Image 1 (cartoon, helix red, strand yellow):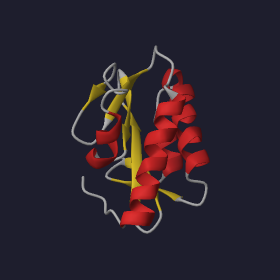
Image 2 (image 1 turned 120 degrees about the vertical axis):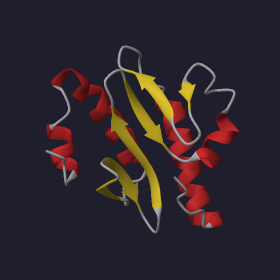
Image 3 (image 1 turned 90 degrees about the vertical axis):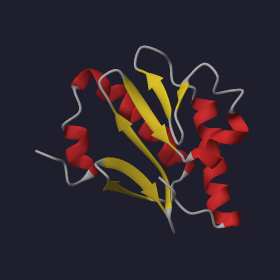
Length: 121
């Protein structure tokens, strides 16, 4: 059954992946404490005036989706990770790069608030 809420999404994630998923969620909640968390495209997203970022759990990795423009300034720091057009993959068996995630999330929030950047996914 497809989840319709963030809570249902978390209920469907396998237990061994939940700790890392919760860690990523906690990092993002702390960076965007006033954002609303909803389910969109089957993934949890944080939104304010527009969607700030999304995240999701997969079989072998977590994905953090802050949009491509928010990744560009961090290309050098992202070299150790698999990066797609709008997202970064983090393996479950490796520590999350907390400071890097925070910097990217803050950059995205600033881009939305100052430059009125919209979500392009």
